[in-house]
Length: 274
Ligand code: BTN
Image (cartoon, rainbow, N blue to C red; front, top):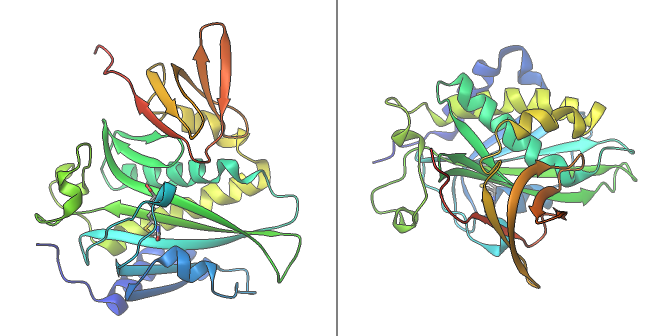
C-alpha cells in the first residue's frame, strides 16, 4: 500500500531539500482537491515574484490531456501544479510542456532513475511505458497585462496501488518498478522544482531553441515510425525530432510535416529492432 502522507510535514521536507532555492517558491501542500491545475488557474496570481506551487495528496477530478482524467493516490503519486509568470515578449508557449518534461527527466536522473525519455508533447516515459504526464494551461495575466501566466501541472506515478484502475492499462509504469527504494513525494517534488527553476529561467531568456537539443536527446520516438491522429486526419511517418518552436517533425516520403500539439495523439507503429 502507498505510505500515508502528512501534507504539512511533506511541505517542510520539500523546503528543507530545496535549501537556498526555497524562497523562489510559495508552496502549499493539501490533502485533497479536485485538480491542482483548476485551483491555480482560478487563484489570483501572486505579485511577489515567487512561483506558486500547489500539491495535493489526492485529486478527485485530476485533469489529463485531451479531456482525460488523471488518477492519484495519497503517497502513491505526486500531483502538483506550478504557476510561472512570463514577462511580455516571452517565448512562444508551445515549448513549455516540452521543457517541463526535460526538467522532470533531469530530476529523475538526479534521483538515480536513469533512462527517462520524453514522448512529445507531454509524457514522461521509461521504455515504452508512461511514468508521468504534464498538462500546461495558459492564462493572460490580468495583473500585469500583456504578460502571460502558465500553470504547469505534473503527475508522476510513484507506487501505484494494486487496485488502481490505471494498472489495467498497458504501458503504464511507476517509480517502484524502476528503483528499489521509492523516494518520498517531497524528495521527488524538491528535485523537480529545482530543475524547473533552472530550465524555466533558461526558457524565458533564450526560448525553446536553447533547450531543443537536450529535449531531442531524450525523444522516445526519434527515428521511429509513428502514427499521428487528429480529429481531421491520420497519417504515419518517421519522427525526426522537434522544430525550434516545439512542433513535432514527421517525415512522410519527400515531405516533412509539422505537427502542433492541440488535440493530436502520437503512437509508435512498431517496435524498432534493437
Ligand atoms: C496527461 O498525461 O494527460 C497529463 C496529466 C497531467 C496530470 C497533472 S496532476 C497535477 C495537475 N493537476 C491536474 O488536474 N492535472 C495535472
